[in-house]
Amino acid sequence: MGKVFAISKAGIDVFDALATNDPNDFIIHSDYSTFKILASGKLLNQTVSGEPTTFSVAHGLGYTPNFFSFCKFPDGKVAMNGQFSYDFTGHSPTAAGYGYFLAEADDTYLYFLVYKNSGASNFNVNIKYFIFEVAL
Amino acid sequence: MKLVIAKPTFDALTENDPDNLQFSSDYDTLKYETTGTITLTINQATYHYSEHIDFPDMWLYYQYGYIAVAHGLGYIPFFSAYAIDNPTNYSSPLPYFDAGGGIFFISANVYADANYLYFMVNYVTDANSGNLSFDFSYRIFKNELDI
Image 1: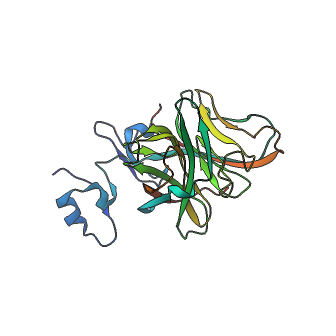
Image 2 (image 1 turned 30 degrees about the vertical axis):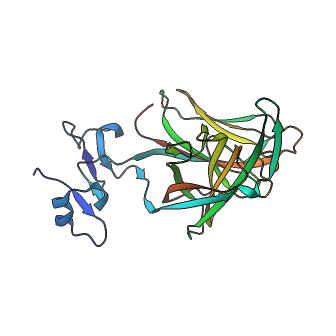
Image 3 (image 1 turned 45 degrees about the horizontal axis):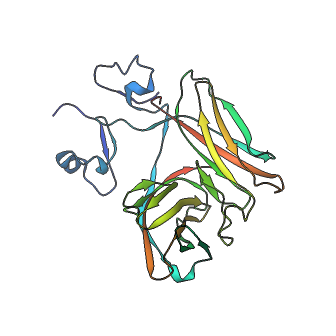
């Protein structure tokens, strides 16, 4: 075995973990790359008035990044990319009037599109994004 | 002072590209809180809407249900989830939209707030009786969304 840097999880002897070599037993193991967060940010109290309203963030990387994002709707529930905001009692994405969250990216920007349903009142959302290592 | 572990053939003392590093204390990482599975069972006799279509001649039943998992963090965490061996015979990351296995349209979703993860399914089927179950697997990380 070559030299490694390893920290095992609580309750697991690091030498036992190295012997069995299950990556799930380690907090850090120098043979495995960690999923590094290069940047994160948030957009707060963004008003959705269109179908959709687009919010953009310049990421400055010059390539399309690996990213993940979340949108908090007025009902307090956080949706992932590609989800409608549902009123859980209304059985329908149109019941709450909040609409749909979609995230996109290119070499310059992250784009967050939030739809409101036709005729619905404007509402505010909070958005959180994470940019990870390794370009798309 | 920082801790850097480079990938093989790269020099930890000089390498700055995070793609070439196994670990660097310059970068945050996702930190596991917990993982788990949960099953949502929908009683199809409790459909919330139905409609008749002429071609083919049949009734459609709109089914809906959700189930919550308490995560106990007191803040909204980074999360991800999957449907496992769902009725369309695939495992998929959530959210997903699909059809198959006797389901004409399905939307499976996951949401979070400061206390729970919510797994919610909407689907349309020709069935108005019996139960249909959906298995979900989830990962919750300690990283706070702070929104």
